Length: 80
Image (cartoon, rainbow, N blue to C red; front, side):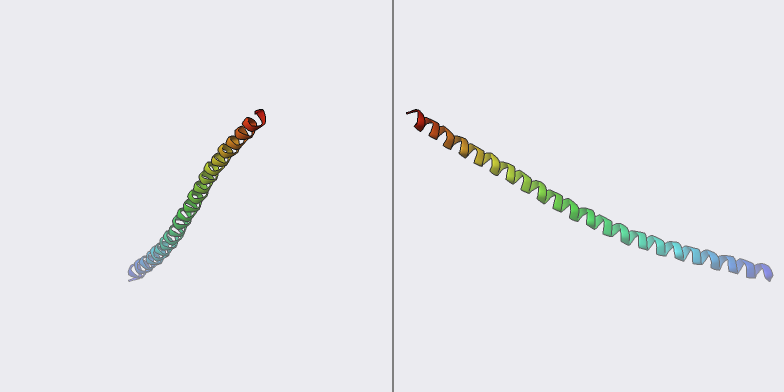
């Protein structure tokens, strides 16, 4: 009888520990999901910034070519 009581207590203790582990796993899964979403958001922001930098570089190159063209025209005019 005493052994059965001890055995039952051990099973209850194991059950509490398993429930605690399940709760911890669910908590970690939720946190992991939040982190994955944050990573995706940051990757999108990073891609937007990279795209903006590329557009800015292209615009800068375009402006530089226009300025160089105008300077060449001015040079031609001043040489005549």
